[in-house]
Length: 169
Image (cartoon, rainbow, N blue to C red; front, side, top):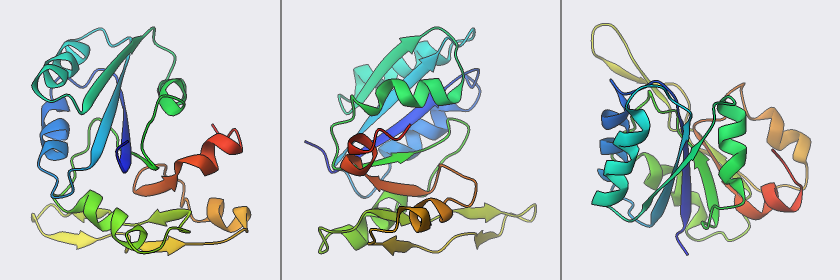
């Protein structure tokens, strides 16, 4: 069982999916699986995902008819084997320490439900500036958990059983 399941919905990103997947392979934290969901992409995105699954068995690929990003994510939530789940968009790439940063608060605290942070912005000048610092949350206050989303599903780490036990999709 991996510590983290990374879920990436994939649609019409053949020009940038390799950068995304290469950034996953470059992670300093290596105890992960990556569930790639080809959402009926009409380009070579699904085939590129299949190539990565052949290179590294931590990648698992699922192909489905197009139904949108939420249906792609929901398809694999029950297939995730990690203790935690994170989502990455297929047109993004992450720094080598991104997953390690999300997981760090969880290493010694088995009660962490949610961590958010790790997003940076790259300015036109090339300068990298923090967008979200890492913030862990341990709470029975689920409203507080969901208020922490900031409108994004990415840059978050969720304890898997919180999502599955509550049927959150």
